[in-house]
Image (cartoon, rainbow, N blue to C red; front, side, top):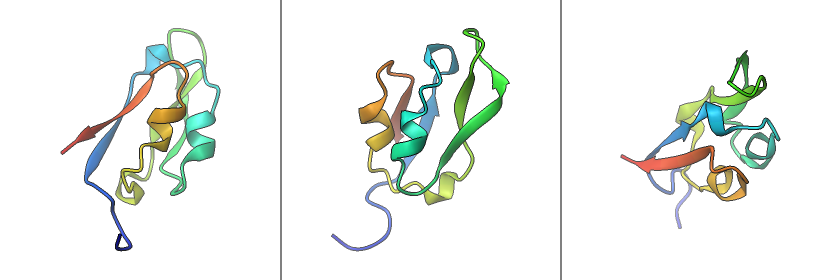
Length: 75
C-alpha cells in the first residue's frame, strides 16, 4: 500500500450518542479529532473533526467507539 490516504471518507459524529470516553480521539493516528467545546444532550463534550484533511480513512475511530457515535462515510 502506498503512503497517503487509504480511502476518501468523511468522518461523521453523532453527538447525542457520545458519552465522551475519548477512545476515538486517543486511537486516531492522524489527530483528526478533538473534544468540542459544546455539550451534547448527555451534558458531555463530544468529539469534533478539527483536521479533516489528515484523515486516512483507517476506521479506527469507528471501530473503537462503544456507542456507535462515530462512523466513516465513503465519498
